[in-house]
Length: 94
Image (cartoon, rainbow, N blue to C red; front, side, top):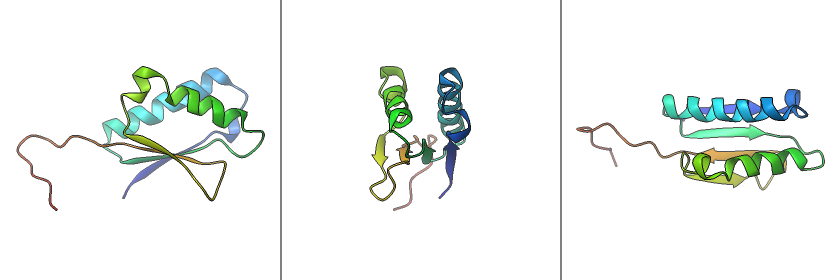
């Protein structure tokens, strides 16, 4: 199972770059039909994680993904899951 990883440590204090990086990784996951994005805001004070969650909670962004999980073993990590629609004429194997 392929997944994308976005580590925000290098841009933790650059709000505009954080939003761009989040948009870019979401668009890449949609374009490449990748099921999972792992976002690493880091542990720190939790402010960056809150910023990421607020970004993901925007109506137009929320419509793009299926669900979010907070890693129960690592406070500084989030997972965003996608459900991609299959092309017409192809049946899903069960």
